[in-house]
Image (cartoon, rainbow, N blue to C red; front, side, top):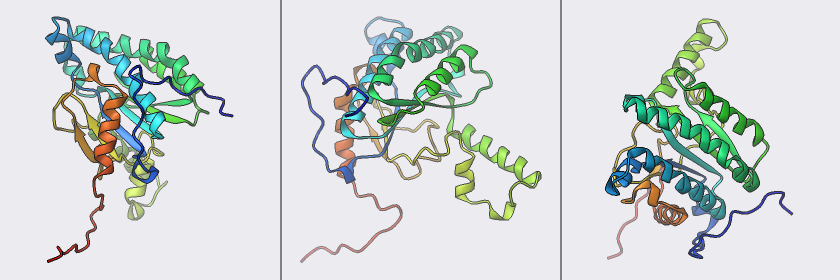
Length: 260
């Protein structure tokens, strides 16, 4: 018997689609976009949109567990988001710490391991503390892994890895002639994070916005025209159904002549 509690069923009674395990993505990257537009359409502030997005994240994690998806990575705050107004940045920093504190018991019950990817410099100490507490208290969980990408940027991650490799090469710790893709992988924020299979973005925008660039080299991209606070596990399941229908060749191809 599992020591963890399964997530509650969706209020609508919806069930995860029956998709063969080999067609279920192992790692889903999620760009949680559209909070501000959702709020403004309702005469609310952008901050209220961020607040409403908390429920969406928790439900998507629940849906991933129900489908047997072991890894979910969520783009919570990018290295470029510091360009936003000081009041919005301040809200997001405080809110991120609050979400980690508020949802920790739920993720603990479900067996979700929390990880954090991102740069320490500039990130608020209170946020780092909450992320580290969540990492520490869930480190032995194995139902699913949720990587919170906070103060994260794909280019920044690769640049930081390159700088660390250069330092170790200069110090004689590694041979420059033997640096390859596996070397770079080992210097990323989360070296054991598998490649992204399904890259999901809400809000209708069709770009990857500097998220998990290295890991998403062969990801299947799904862009959905729904604002993040309106997302739930059914949104994830619909994206997985699209993913399952795609032909992933990883650069390879074979002739498939049409029958005359």
